[in-house]
Length: 517
Figure 1: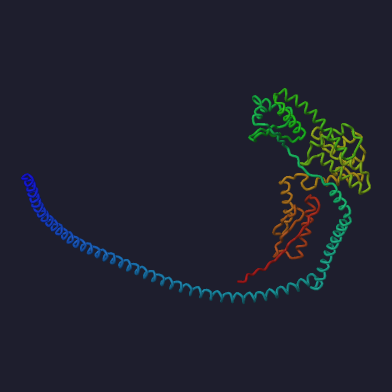
Figure 2 (figure 1 turned 180 degrees about the horizontal axis):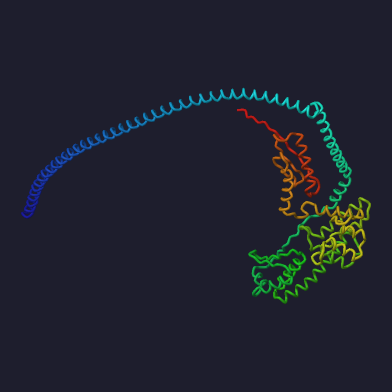
């Protein structure tokens, strides 16, 4: 029991001691916090005083700076005002000088106007004197010549009448020519109908042929070791073989279509065969020549069969077939000959002539072109020799000789063949003409008009079928325009060669233009 009480007493004593210690500690801690807080308050007051002093100093500096800027701006404004004042003074001085200059100019103009008035009066006096002198000279001329003014006028009118008589004669001659053209209307209609009844397609031949290859490796095989294969091909065929960067193709170039065709067939056979070497090239070339010869004969036979013509010598048929491999200005010679034969037959039938003979003459009219590269002479002379060799009709021989006007035509059929030849060659697109020749022809035509006095510019239009001459209206009157038209016509007829007719139009125009605003 005593132990329990002792324990309770110890606990109570411990609590009392803890309370006392805690109170002492809290008391001292409160004193320390109060002292610390008072210290912080004093420090804050000092910082606030310092900030007030700094703000006052900064405010004074800012006020001083603003004062300096304001003083500077005032100085600049004063300088600008002084500069503006100087410019105004200078402008005022300039305006005074300009006013003085205008006054001087006005006085000079008044002086010039006075001089002009005096000069005009002098001119009037001089003009009256000139009129008097002119009248005296006319009187003197009448006395010297013995002609009065009315009689001289009669002479002039007589001269004009004589010139007009020439004009009337020329007009009558032109009317007669026009009447002839009207009379030839039936002939033109006949030619047009013939052209309508035979309208074959046109295809211009070229001077190169493209051969397709199975692959680009074949180019190397065609060239061969050190180029021996290509040299052999070019040597035996006479054709240039062009191998470039074009994929899977080579080009054969030659102006001889027959050689080019033989080379094409030979090369294609070599590609198919696969064995490309000089010996094989020569073998296939010989075989191709024989095949092409048979093909030429077939061309000749087909042509005569299509035209319904018979009794040709076999050698002459082969020569006719060779025309397939000849060209004239890009036009196939055999196609041209067939065309001429068809047109000749149609025209002969309309005129009641021998149709078969006209077709025969039309087919053989250019036969000389088949071998003109093998025999000396023109194709006309060669054609005449061939026709005589194979005992052709005299009418056919004369048609061959006269179709270009080298020999006089002795029959209607010969004239028909010449007309048909011109029709076939002049069809649009049938033959190629160089741009240079076309431009030269138009330039020469325009130059004829440009050389005449009073002409401003000359234009050739409608491919040279019409010439438009623009004259200067202040130098050329309406009557003079008619004279220029006749002069241009005469110069063209005398100096130029041209097909058909050329229309000359002289243009004289005067324009008065105003713009309403």
